[in-house]
Structure formats: structure tokens, C-alpha cells
Image (cartoon, rainbow, N blue to C red; front, side, top):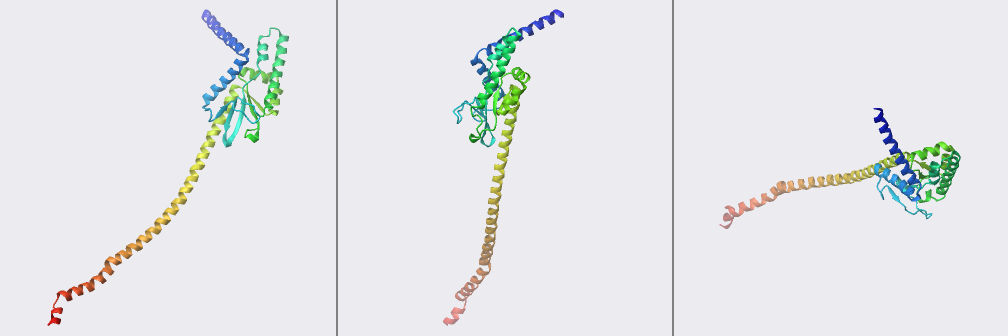
Length: 261
């Protein structure tokens, strides 16, 4: 049993080493870091049900000339921009540092890079109410551990980001935020449809009232026409037939013969 447990532990350790190796490989390449972040965002969007060009657009230039990685389309023609590029080079060196002094230096360098990146994102005019954006821009951090590391090592950094109207999002917080946006968008669409249906019902009610009014008027006209028709086929007909009957009696009876004699 002990041998089995040791073998299981060895396999899990091997998997952890492979995952760590892959993470370091990703962190060592700026191109792979960007692809990693975009892939994670794409997975989240697909899982929630977001559709490109309907719920979000990618790499679309804003008025300032910048191109946010993602722009989420909100109700009432509002937009929310997000940047997924994140400075992880110093964090990779922090992981690889052997000495405590080197780790401390790389940690400070990484936190400094994060602060500078927040400042850079805030200066790109991703927040532009005149263009229809909301008051904040999202900055995606593609790893829960890195997000937790930032919160633990520099609590003031989150406040600094909020002052710059930049929201730092880990995969979990981004998922929660986008889920809320998706539900709000659907609710807004349903409310719009309900309003449209109510407007159509009001229009139908108005036209139905006019239709009933015309039909009532036509019904009254038909009643009058029927009465006139009944009069024509009864009273008027009888009045006309009476002299005709008398004429027939005169022309076919003995009264004319008596007059001739």
C-alpha cells in the first residue's frame, strides 16, 4: 500500500513539474504570454456563450487610435474595453531566482512593471464616455496565482488601479463579471422585446377600436338598408301590385265589353 501511495505521489509530482515547466515556458516568451491570455479569454467567452460581433469585438480601433484586445458590447450602445497583455517577464525571473535576495529584487521589479502597465493602459483612452464606453477598463491577469500574488504582496496596487479606472481581473473574476454582463444584456433584450410587444398591442387595440366602430356603423347601415328592403318587398310592392291587379281585372273582365256595347 505504501509503495502504491509513493508511486501515485511520484506521478502527481511529475505532472506538477510538467505544468510548472510549461508555465515557465509560456512566461519566458512575450508572444506566448499574449497567446496564453487570449486563449484563456476565448475559453471563458465560449463557455459563457458570448458571440463575436454580437456580444464583443476584437482588436477594433478606438478614437485615440489604440486597439483594445476586446471590446464588450453592452445595452444602450455602451462599451467596455479590455486589455489582455500583461507584464510577466519579471515574474518568470522571480520564479527562477535561486537566492532570496534575487527573488526579492525580481518581486519588486514585477510589482513595478504591473504598476507601470496599469498607468499605460489608463493612458490609452480606453475609457472615453464620448465614444460610449463605461467608466472603467478591464486588465486581464491570466493566472489566479499571479492575481493572488499581486493582492498579497502589494495591497495598495489594487487601489492605485481603481484610481486609474482600471479593474484587474483574474480568470475567475472575469468569468463572474462577464456572466453578469451576459445576463444583464439578455434581460435588457427581453425588456426591449416586451416594450415592443406592448407597443404593438397598443397599436392593435387602437386599430381594433376603429375597426369595431366602422363595423358598428356598417351594421347600422345594413339594418337601415334591410328595413328599406323589407318595406320595398312588402308595403311598396303591395301598393304597386294593387293598381296592377285592378288594371288586369278591367282589361280581362266584362267591364270593357259593357262599355263597347
